[in-house]
Image (cartoon, rainbow, N blue to C red; front, side, top):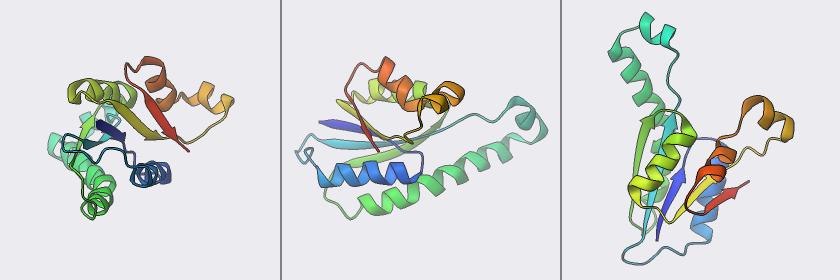
Length: 140
């Protein structure tokens, strides 16, 4: 089984990763965990005000902040995994990665906002749930 873990670096990502390790059912030879971190694009005005190198450096620094602790944790476990990061609309990039990686399951933490929070701010988890072609496991 190939599992895609959407990682935003929050305590909810840590809970989802913890749940995965406690309920491991992908220990087989062909099983793999793919960790994906998606960063929202910088607003055009910000990108226009700084150089492309500054923007690239910012994205890389943010990815390191999120992925390094996860990678450190995963290195202590006996399983196949790889991590990567992209810039884009989070729900779209998660779904695109699930298709590209041929994932059997998407796992993600959810911030658990109520109805008002979802209406006002949207929800990555809600959008992934609505459009995913594979099962989605939300850990709260």
